[in-house]
Image (cartoon, rainbow, N blue to C red; front, side, top):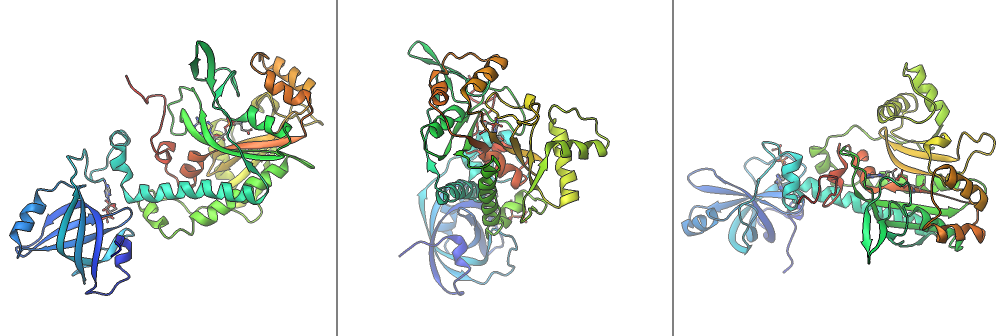
Amino acid sequence: GELNTIAQLDRFPVGTEVDFRARIHAQRPMSKLLDFLLLRDQTHSVQGVLSREDPEMIKWVKQLHPESLVQIHGILKEPPEPIRSASHAGIEVDIKSIHLVNPAGNAPFSNYKPPETLRNRMNARILDLRHPSNQVLFRVRSIVTRKFRETLEDKGFVEINTPKLQPAATESGAAVFKVNYFGRQAFLAQSPQLAKQMAISADFRRVFEVGPVFRAENSNTHRHLTEYTGLDIEMAIEKDYHEVIWVIDDFLKSVFEAVYSLPEIEILQSRWPSKEFKWLDETLILDFRDGLQMLRDDGRDVADEDLSTPDEMRLGELVREKYGTDYYVLDKFPANARPFYTHRDTEDRDWTRSFDIFIRGQEICSGGQRIHDLQELRTNMLASGMSEDGMEDYLLAFELGAPPHAGAGLGLERIVAWMLELGDVRYASLFHRDPKSLPE
Ligand code: ATP
Ligand code: AMO
């Protein structure tokens, strides 16, 4: 018949015959009569009992390494003392037979007691990923990309894939990986920025992409990856660039609702405890200048140019105290803090029609309205010290009349890591890349 998951075992009455596949998590000799075997699948564990009446079986089981994959046939029984934990079955299994599906060699660590360092875990990442908390974490990550696609497709967006091999830097010259392209120089895309704007000039009207983003920044922090997954949006606008904010807002709220109603969320929170995540029905859009004022009223010495990471974190706390939300939009950034394609505020050209979005005081998104006038774009590129070499295709998009448009980019790993308070974006990446990855 069909195999069960361990989580399903709790639904059957004592005495039911069950078959399931699991890994040997730990072995414990208990008494003269019994041996216990802790068995684990993706998200749950269950205690299996081996009767000492079959000494050959016990001897054979004892030589199996933890992490070995076995198939169990057994009968459900009442446990003497039920184990209380989000990822433990409340029932026990009387093991009738064990079949070895595939043995495991020596695992570099067998559990998290004593706690493993991030480095040790990442050195045996597939073992680390077998932890129930990680099984749930990657389901959460998958919910985020699914909600992104669902929300945008419902609103008439078209999913596109833009080239990752580029003739020029897409954001700024410094943080870019060079690639040898048949003897010519190419770059790994630092964002789909230019291509997604070109799609708008191609009259696609509303586009999105889920794809890899490469950043050559040598930043060894808990929030920088050299390769991350970008969730990008670009759209023609009718009245103003806040139209893009409302699209992202619908997407993010659908994520918060889905994630915080997941039954397995408890398994995640037992490894990464987090403060209650608060958001408002009507999302707060805070003017950058009002944010500055809140920080100054708090006694901080902040310049008009941009916010430092500690400033952002503090503003997150102040916003939570004042408005009761861990999620908000900071709007109308100063011009010198934004890239060359950003549309200025026509009333006051030192400021822009652009925004960042924050979760628990940390940035997850940047976006805004783009310049669609060819002359203004050229002037701005020149002022930013950018060359037009390799930008010919991009400039053609404006020469042929691009519609007014706005867009934004979100970092998938940051959304997951900050929402769940993981403390490090690396946990939210399957096999992460940071400046220390790929050693010789
Ligand atoms: P307690 O802290 O109360 O003992 P627990 O028994 O749930 O809680 P944890 O060590 O927190 O123990 O593990 C939670 C779950 O993760 C358990 O179901 C356990 O089987 C499983 N687990 C622990 N370490 C690993 C690991 N390295 N790989 C895979 N699963 C693991
Ligand atoms: P920006 O450079 O701010 O904007 O990037 C957008 C979002 O991507 C995430 N992010 C990162 N995540 C992990 N590691 C990194 N090194 C990293 N760098 C950035 C952040 C950030 O908010 N083209 C614009 C977006 C736009 O205007 O459409 C851009 O790339 O969550």
